[in-house]
Length: 280
Image (cartoon, rainbow, N blue to C red; front, side, top):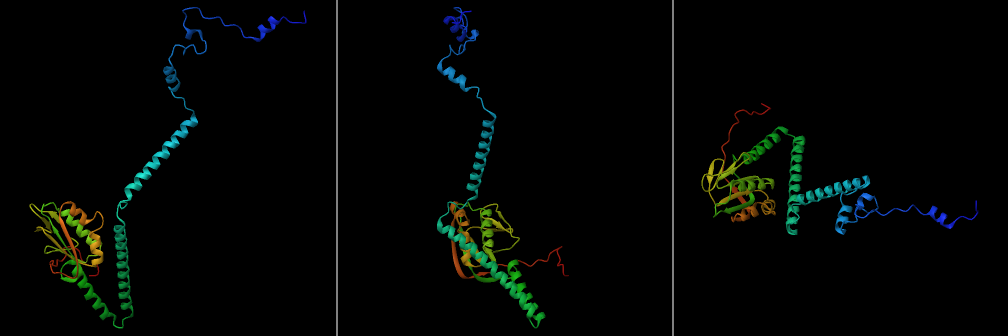
């Protein structure tokens, strides 16, 4: 065997076998040649074929799900925060007034606590506990009579007059005023000669005006309220409160502080039909 190899023979061993060209008129895709199936496609068709159907790995799917969950949680949190911040549009002076009202309510509760503690101390230390208990019982009866509307009352407070030329004021609006006044510490309320007590109900009348405990009253509605004026007036003027609601209905509202308010409308004292004191 010759030691020197034929150069043509060596070259043929290193190169791959020659692929014969497909015969004329044959389908390039059927020949199996690389890119034969895409030879007849336009650039836009090849781009669409590369993008669809999408090919995702398992890791990419997990990351996408985590990001979607995180986005949903952030959206819910932002929405809930926006809904709960009802005073975000209030002016600075309104926020200060609301804060002062809360401080005043806290002060009233502290004063009531000290008063009750003082009564307890008097009962414990009085030399004549029976007489002291009788005095406190009489005083307590007067207080309960004021709350029940069976006795008249006088003291500092406010008056509120509501005019309603359009007849747009409804019973629910006046009820909101009563509830807001009670929350601000009102101790006695009278509306157009009707004493407002714990069981008072308001309803829209058949014609003009409203009904309070079955008594029809007509505008202007005049409220006489006994309580701390510094608490009652701001409670009616809070943003979105009673005064603004009535003014949106084009009703006129006038709130005036007074050193002496007389509430003289009385309710008959009724004995309960079924309820009895547990001490009897």
